[in-house]
Amino acid sequence: MSDVTLQIDGKQVAAPAGATVLDAASAAGIVIPTLCHHERLAPFGGCRLCVVELESRGQHRLVASCAHPVEPDLVVRTRSDKIDRIRKSLVELLLAHAPDSTRLKELAREYGADRDRFEPAEGFCVHCGLCVRYCAEIKKLHAVGFIDRGIRKEISFLPEIASRECAGCKECFPLCPTSYLQAAYVLVEALAFPPPPSTR
Amino acid sequence: MDTQAIARIIDKYHGEPSSLIQVLLEIQADCHWLPGEALELVAERLRVPMSRIRHIATFYKAFSLVPKGRHEVHVCMGTACHVRGAPRILERLTDLTGLQPGETDLELKVTLETVNCLGCCALGPVMVVNGKTHGKLSPAAAADVMKTYE
Image (cartoon, rainbow over all chains, first blue to last red; front, top):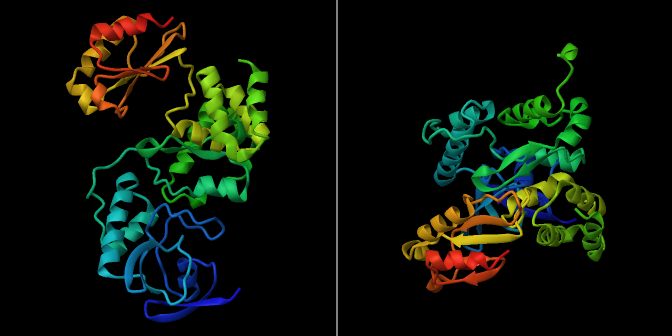
């Protein structure tokens, strides 16, 4: 495929057609913060932390760079006051769910986010979908999925599959930015297929 | 639950995974809920992972993972119906059936639900029973409507 030339933070960057803005930026050594992105998984666009400002044909737009394909002559800004302000608010909203997540604390330091800006919210899951997508797309096991919607949306293991597959895999555990996944797993294990006492 | 009836519904869609929601809607219409065995059959025949079926079945309010009654009563609680006395209609129906919104009686006759707006505010207060709209209700009229359903 032919390459597309675009400008990211004033740098001319060539990227293969069909690549995302995030791919093009990381190939050029420009760091865009992400939370729900995983290079082996299809773009999800869930956390919006990778928001960047685009300028094409005189118009400005804010897009999630992990899901936006490169276009010829696109001008991309990955840091500006506006973007920093948006990322700060996003991190603050995420912190309301997971105030002690290491990854979120790092981001909070970088963007000056206040962890107490929003009332602590129930549920430590930030709905990045990494575990659900990893299990479905890479392991093809579908042992964990989302249930319900809106503020009641949560991840949930399927005990029938989890009891069979998870003990030997657990590859999604390190992906979770908040450790909520491990808690959900321990809960389903205790409820549906508790290990015999000797192995604990 | 009739496994063959479920299988017939699934076969109508030639095992097309994209017809998942249509299949679930038909099972819901037939059984008034989505029994676990039916969902397993759907997962197997349509080759759709159970996690996705569960996601969809819990996402849409049209689906229920617990048995619902033969008659589904939806009482509108929208603003227009509210000011025209919807709370009194609901109170009358909860007295009559002994059910709180969201509950189903043990004989699986009636499920009482509230909805936020049915879109026909001029008819308020409104309730819908099995898809039929009853408008300009009084508590007594709502009770009379309920008597026509067995």
